[in-house]
Length: 181
Length: 426
Image (cartoon, rainbow over all chains, first blue to last red):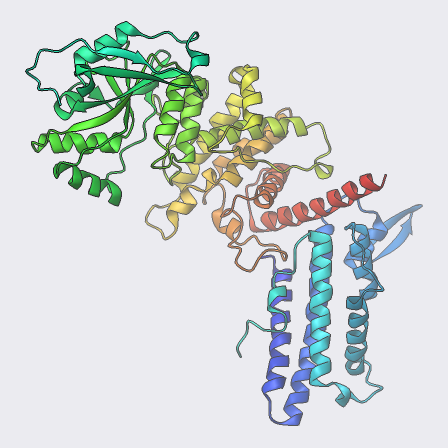
């Protein structure tokens, strides 16, 4: 497998394993640490999956510079009266990239009223507790982390079905990890 | 049973035709008399009934013949088309290690009486053995071995008279349905019935050796099957038809010819008759035969998994996609040269099976083993992308190229799906 998708899959298995470890842990500190790890690695895995999907479509030559810029997270500048994709990082909102992918390369765009989208937004808010720690990070509970990982699985599955016409390969395992560390 | 020493009474031949066919059918009296005199069936003391298969109007009789007479005057070495293709056989090989056959052999020696050995009586070819066994060759061989062991029983025979090629093929098919006819054998029989052109073409381009027939069953390392040859040609023309469109906007998914049943696309293509004189198709066929050979030679046979790698060119996804790409590039001398040049890779096998095996996509099932093991539409489409982009530079197949081909395939499929949906909306 190309390095990026393989790494994304591995990350996701790690995230699920961390949540399993949180379930097994007796000490509350360890439990919380595993939950934090599961949540953060879960989101990293999700972004890696989205990047791998974007990477597929960068092989299309007919894309406009702005479309390429969105997929590759590159800036776009007006040069000599024409837009040109630059080799500079310009971060895009993850939600925007998801919506763009499924609008541009699928006949079934993301339904922002569907429960999977709402669950994903809730999961993002939970992740933000860790990355923008204005709130109490101890608010992350086992149940909340499980729901967040499930939301990622569901959204990824919707995206795969929408773009590739196939389920996420690991969908059938839901929250069960292949890893056993 | 009539004793061999009893003077033969001239039997009555009694046609048992349905009333609506009586006027259409002619009893081959002379042929029947010749059969009776030669084989002296048990029924010759009385009445020999002549039936018709109303489906094909083939005439036949059901009778009983002593093993010594049956074996001495019969053969299983029967051509399907004795006039135009006498060197090619319709019967499959004896499956000598089949448990059912082993039991059959033992039973015959224990005086088993067999029935429904199917044959055609004809002296038009191979007159020394006028009874041509076209069904039940396993039973026939068991009877032959039992006779050699001194067992001489009477066996039931269904004998056809005056068959046409179509009737002969039909008789072979229906008489082989007890032990199922492999789809590849069916295809071979069908193709033989239609004529020698496909076989001749394959022999000419090197996909078959001289005088070699198609495989009756697909096996690693054996010659190509009819299905493989048809798939190659069908996809060459499918690619040629797609050449007019923009590659990145065209669904370039090759197909695999139907096997075990008639394929309408193949029948149509074969019917126009021009393909046998198409020099570009012939060149593609020769190049593909050379690729098969180069792939086989590049791999050391003793290595683990070597057979699979050696035979990689004959994976149906590879074969179909290679032919499709050849058709697609038939008018592009630079790219087609690079496509044909794939066989000349040095230092590794031309198809680089190791790099193929690492080719995965994130949407692949976790059990997916890498490119080159399956033959489904996705696999075939991925190979077209790979062969096509290989002709950008002609540097051979590499890992990054495999990854790019897979990405391009999935990106194209998604874009085409959006286009289809948009067309529906209007």
